[in-house]
Image (cartoon, rainbow, N blue to C red):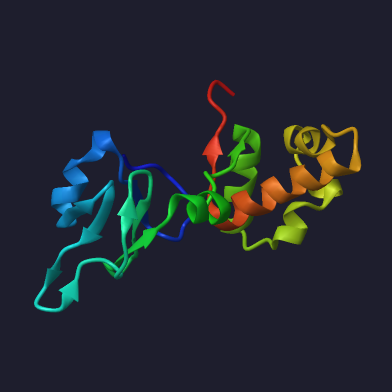
Amino acid sequence: MIKAYLKRPVCVERIDELGTGLLDKYEIYSLSGGMWHPHDEVGHSMLCSGYLEWGDWIATGADGSHWIIPNALYEQQYAELPVIPKAVADWIKKCKKNTVSIGGAMNEPDLPEKVADYFRKYYTREQWIEIQDTFARAWLDGYRVEEGK
């Protein structure tokens, strides 16, 4: 299964029982008890040395290198791309095209009305921080646009 995640790594695939084709793709073999290990070819492993368990992830970098990410670490360090409204996505694209800084892109007097509405939808300090964090993550890492909006 391939999903869109943060820019680094380029591609992340989860080793699960339904994705056993990945075992062949990465030349992984079983040791015992649900543990898996990358296959070594003349001392050169396709992956980092280590063991895999069902649910672990194989990441592929831009240079074609692969590495194992244990599921617990993956959940801690890599999150799905933030979901933002189309108006906010369009604003990010426009600002980047015009070389506006992220600070300038969040400057309230310059915001289009729908983007200003996005930033105004908070009732607590925690919600305000979360909105800013989501915008910053979308700016830096990419985003998905809300469906139907």
